Structure formats: structure tokens, C-alpha cells
Image 1 (cartoon, rainbow, N blue to C red):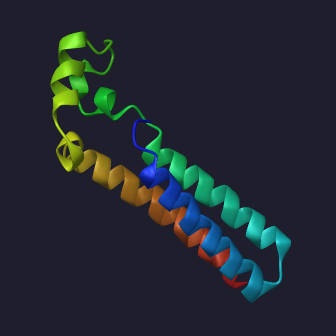
Image 2 (image 1 turned 30 degrees about the vertical axis):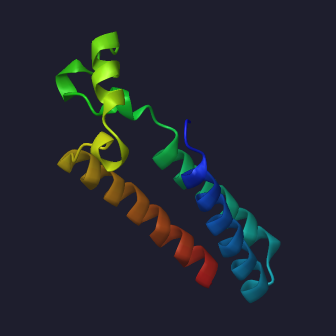
Length: 108
């Protein structure tokens, strides 16, 4: 990962959330579940090779060519993250369900 800023910010937010959970529930197990869900959530957003997934879906079975990687590397910031309705739907379903189950566990 070339820029560690988003990772550091996400981990700081997770540490704050864990502190809030442990202080409000007095439960080490709930804090541990918050940590695991948070780490998996952060890993799902920050670790994938977006240069690979930003290509057309029909190109996914094939390796990224050097020309594709060069053209994607020239884009900066938010331009590198192509808008994909399927990606938004999939992330919304997975993260929405995970947050629902986490909240259900924490609030009981």
C-alpha cells in the first residue's frame, strides 16, 4: 500500500470504537468481536488489488498487463476507484449484514 494514511485513520477509528464498546458494555468478548469485525472490514476495503478489480469484468480471469497497470497508475485519488454498481451492491449487502449482526451482538 503506497499511502498508509487511510489505514492509520481506519485503525485509529477502530481503536476508538473498541474503547467505547469496552467502556459501555464492560465485556472483553464484545470488544474482541468488535476488533475482529473491524479488522475484516478494513481489510475488505483497503487490501484488495483495485487495479485488478477496476478492469472490465470479462478481463478478470486474465492477468493485469503492464499497459493496464500503467494507465491505472496515472490516475490519482478518487479517479482510480471506478464506480461499479455491482461492487456497491455487494459491499452494501455484505457490510450491512455484518454491521447488523455486530450491533445485534453488542446491544444484547
